[in-house]
Length: 141
Image 1 (cartoon, helix red, strand yellow):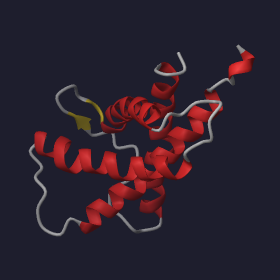
Image 2 (cartoon, helix red, strand yellow):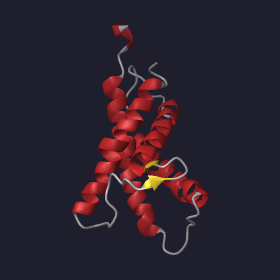
Image 3 (cartoon, one colour):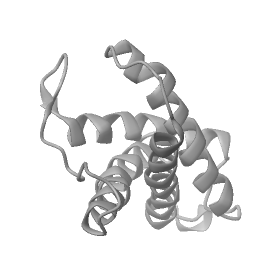
């Protein structure tokens, strides 16, 4: 259960509490136009974007937990989680998901990549926070 369900739940919650909140804070600071918690429908299912993002983030958290070997008995990989979220999720969003939706990378990508890195890196850190909080140590079984 600790290898699949808990990272999935941690990734879902990290999307809501860290990723979307980072976007909302950047918007409140006047740095970006889009706000967090977008309720625009995400096609093809028609779910609000923030829910669809949370579901995808939950899947990514399972992969992150496996790649970084997150376990109660090991040291928490804080920096690798931050980097994984920032690079892997941003690259997947810009170069895979968006082209599938008909949004092609073009022009000056630096602002979009920087925004994606900031929000997704906070997601990676937050997912690890939730994973470590939910995982029981081996001797508590």
